[in-house]
Image (cartoon, rainbow, N blue to C red; front, side, top):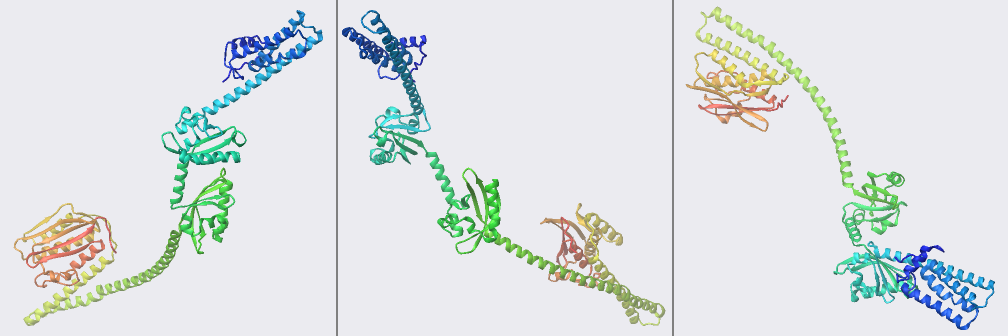
Length: 632
């Protein structure tokens, strides 16, 4: 900054500063150093004084020549310089009058002194103003040169660089010395590539008063950068040169292009809408979904594309966005396609009062809505079928209840109506044998004995049938059951019944399940009694119970024996009521035991199957679910 020589009239500090600056300090306004300016001022005083002495004249013109040194010193040194130079001129004038060199009246002397003082003050104030203006200009130039955000370049009328600030260096890498006197084409890519562009800029600025645009500029190392450029002439037609402002937009352009690319490739239907209801911009996905071109979408209010039934609700949602700044995260409506059909859109929008825009993203959910409608129709159909099925179940349940009542009646009939004749047959046969045993031939006695055995066997069958029926109807209990303990109790009873038999029995410990204790005991009893019975003719009888597997949530157990076995060709008969694979005379029984086992296991969610070989024994496998899945 240039030195400031402002001082009040009569201020001694100002006078001393003037003296100090006379030694050659930097000038404020004039283009010479302070020593030269003082020397010129003193020389002018000497020349004017010499002219007055030489002419010995009291001419006012000679007195007014003192304005030359006064103006020179006042403009450079301001008010102190003006006052001191005016006082010097007044002192010389008074001296000439007192020495008798000039013949002037008193009032003439006062008038000329006053005039000289006014000139000194006036030129001093003018000098201060000029200095202030110079300081302001210097400050502004220094500020502009220190800017790093914008590159500021001054060009002469031919387009060569005459000034270059730090911002231009930060942007392009050229130092001020590198750029000085270089053509504008230097930063536009060289004379061949940038020359025509440089001429276009300067001619446009000279003709229109300004040239604004964006384009590529080239760094010192050859790297290109995208910049906003503004060229302004410093005088009409650019006679005094041009000012160029440069702003780096490389990052902005990259972000803009990235945003544009994301906008174009998005699977969402992106749009901006003005507050007047028109689209400002839509991405290409709109045309793919609805068929309308971008121009057609921008030409009409957006509500024109909305289904008539959805317009009021859509307008209300838009009003909330514009007036209250709400966000819409799940708003749905139907938009008309170019072919006249409608597609469902799900909107997510936000309004910007600053931009007067609504930023929106829409997703085509037509397929989802169709699936929902189809699902609702299916659900309605299923509800109707369920109601029909429920009615049928109620009807079937009623029929089943009636059938159960009939079955109970039938069972009652078997239990009471059939037992009485059987007891009569057995009783009368027994009475005849007792009363007429001596009179009857042996054949008749044998026949009566067979009649009694048959009636007793039929009574047993009736009991077995009734038991099987009760198993089917009774309610299941759910409790922990240890099959090992049940089996040991049953084998102990079998040993007590046939104390003379030697049978090796192996029962695995810890065979725990969950089920109905009474029914599971019935299962173990039938299986173990079968094994015990069919090993009666085996010399070294062996019976075993063990767990053989745990698959898919089911535990599998096996009851094995080395007894009579059976032919696998007839294995399907094992679990049918009254079906037998051995003659009754060989092995007793009713043929209902295994049927009972199968029914019990089925109600527990399990099953039974068997493997065997005639004369080598049989294995009966049954499984039970780990978590009880009992069946009715």
